[in-house]
Length: 201
Image (cartoon, rainbow, N blue to C red):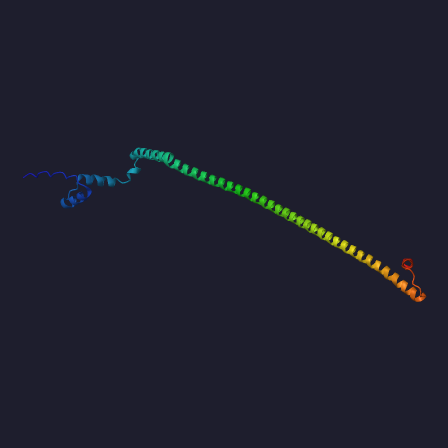
């Protein structure tokens, strides 16, 4: 009896090929090819025949990365840097403007303070001069009143003195007539007594 040729081993995935080989003792064709390729050794990316494809993929990836950096990332980064620089310059300009305004306000306040001090000094000097003028005017009025009273008193004293002198002359004349009459026994006339008093004065 002639032996019938056996069917070629089927093409199976690696896991099923391993199980098939353990059960039947035959290795599937794809498993044998994979084993032969594995036994050949080396990584595919280091084989010369794959370098052209790898270079093409590398150029494509570099071009994509360049386009992304040039068109997306760099403009965004430049916009962020420009916005930051604009914000910083605006903040610096605002700070300088505020500093200038504060200096102007400080100068204005200093000028107002100096003006207020000058006005206060002028007001104090004017008040002092007014008070001094009022004191002088009052003193002059009081001195005038005192002078008028002194003049009136002097007039009264002079009138009193003149009256006293008139009475004193009359008393002296009477006294003289009485003395002469007592001494001589004869009374002189009033005219003679007055002439004698005036002559003695």
